[in-house]
Length: 157
Image (cartoon, rainbow, N blue to C red; front, side):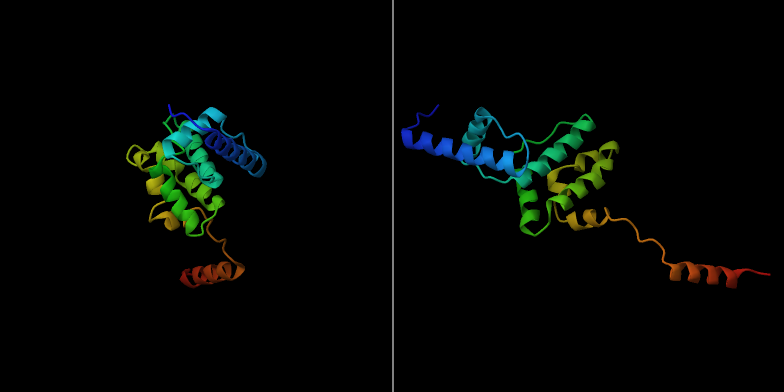
């Protein structure tokens, strides 16, 4: 393990405090303990404060766990990159969670379960998946009238 000097320890403690306050106050969640924070720092070389991405990964993992599947590491580059890209494109946290909810049916399908992963869910078909989450429009009174009129025309008296 690396030996840290005073300046490095001070910077590490300051960054941990910023992270802890950010997660606890802004997201109302329990932040990582210092040991996990330190491990993540050693793996990545730095800590990016992207709590929205963490929320998406947490929901993804919760959904996987409901179906007895293994989850994704929250600091994995291949896990975070597609989610970050969608946020950069302007999509919201709510939209990300909607896609996870819409596609969780894949987990019960023997052919599709392997595609329930960040690379697929938040890839180039994301907008299509997002559009699947919207409810169909209800028929308006004009549509009902048109349908009744057409049925009346087709009736053979």
